Length: 103
Image (cartoon, rainbow, N blue to C red; front, side):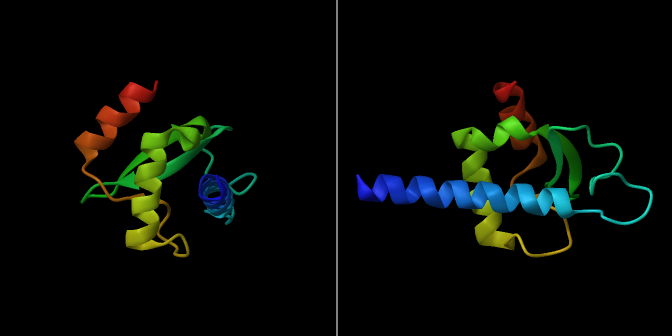
């Protein structure tokens, strides 16, 4: 039970870090509330695949277990403390398939 609770606390901390990181991207001029103007409220941008294709996804995806697995892989591979934006380490076609199932 303690392991499960500890894991849940870790997931919550990681999700908060991701949200904080996503909301702090692009705080330069011409942008409102810390996000690029093309990212609607309740969404965030991620970069996927070899070409770093940009996707705008709803924040609600952060609670889905499959998306959380991708975020853990992103944390392991890239970390969250960089200026490249949130990069997801998977092929674009796999990411599109996953997000289409989450809708």
